Image: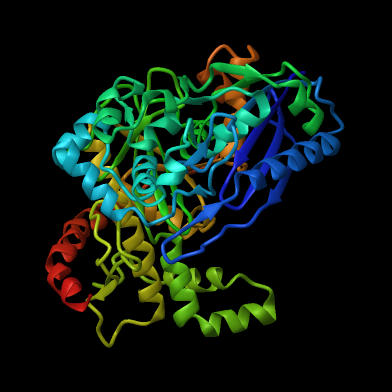
Amino acid sequence: MAVLLGIDISTTGAKALLVNEQGAVLASATEEYPLHTPKPLWSEQNPEDWWQGCQRAIRRSLASAGVTGADIAGIGLTGQMHGMVLLDGAGQVLRPAILWNDQRTGPQCAEITGWAGGLERTVALTGNAVLPGFTAPKIVWVRQNEPEVYDRIAHVLLPKDYIRYRLTGEFATEVSDASGTALFDVGNRRWSATLAGLLQIPMDWLPHCAESEEVTAGISVAAAQATDLQAGTPVVGGGGDQAAQAVGSGIVRPGIISVTSGTSGVVFAHADQYAAEPQGRLHVFCHAVRGAWHAMGVMLAAGGALRWFRDALGQPERAVAALTAEDPYDLLTREAARVPAGAEGLLFLPYLTGERCPHPDPLARGAFVGLTLRHGKGHMVRAVLEGVSFGLRDSLELIKGLGVPIEQVRASGGGAVSPLWRQIQADVFGAELVLINVTEGAAFGAALLAGVGAGVYRSVHEAVDAAVRVVDRTAPQPGVAAEYERLYPVYRGLYPALKPTFDALA
């Protein structure tokens, strides 16, 4: 039976995941590495740390599974998107990698948008607004602030593609990760000569761009010696972390959406046709499925809003949990379950750290609206759960506006653990909410993509059908869904009503 290797270069560590062709996990190993913040707004890592962590994780996973490099049919790569790795002509790293969460490039984003002819023209060229985390503004920042580095650039790589280079000696990327650079023509699945020209970035700095399941090269002799893999083992394009996770969750057909309620909230939808959101409120990238795209909305405080409530107002529940070994979240949601839908007129706006979608506004703030003497802690917890769910629905509504159907929502993240929150989301979305058997995230999707490239599966769809299964279903309750349908426009009116207040408080 074929063994597949998925490698995930995340912000916190390098993960190596071994699975068989039925999707059963054989072994998993993660090696952590540091993140550096040498100045305010800066976020950097040393690419050599990724490579050393990757070597150790691969060797540990092979040993744990009791397999050898010769047993591996294919390797898929995934990882944090948008990061910038600069190499000279000898393939040496020129400076620390600037990461996706680095915020130094606000001025460069404004410049690029101006050079492109404004927001709508920028979205028309690349499918997205230019954001500080993206790759292109980082390159412009280096040109303006580190000219001695800029003058030596020969190659620009994304994080997972630096690992590809160390594994194979080849400079390559794939369409889903390239979509987040602000240098990519997302609609036509190729580098944008227009954008590169506007930014004066030489096209020969940019790597060959493959489809996600396409084999880009084989493991080199040097990498085989460093990792215990076998030389020549095929390495496929893989995918950015969100696209690879979507493959691993079975989000490869129209109508199936994923909603991840972690610290932040991510709504991800497969689309067979390319369509950009004109104001750039959604990310629209190439999917890790050939001939498909995806739309993605991000809210900054999803599970993070409930964690804030637990830390700020949940001290009694935390004290009880410490004595009883219960989860304080379970105690809080138990109180919320006794409150009717709508929290008896209490609404919560979940913009605790600003917002991205549908209101790209760093000055937006959180708010409870409608508090009265009859409201207690259970009402407030329920309002938080409902407010986050309404915020996620905002992204779903924008996705619907692109012509993407929504038939089933696959839930993951901490918010998916709570049966109450799953039911609230199903009722707010008006769609079935399901859980799947996969919990391994992006590395699992990368392994499935490797299986397609290696010929284990004929297509990404066949891979998903073999490995991903629904294990729980939550249907919307018609009466409760109708109540949320009534309240959603009220929620939608809160931000414009409070926007002047947010600005005045900044």
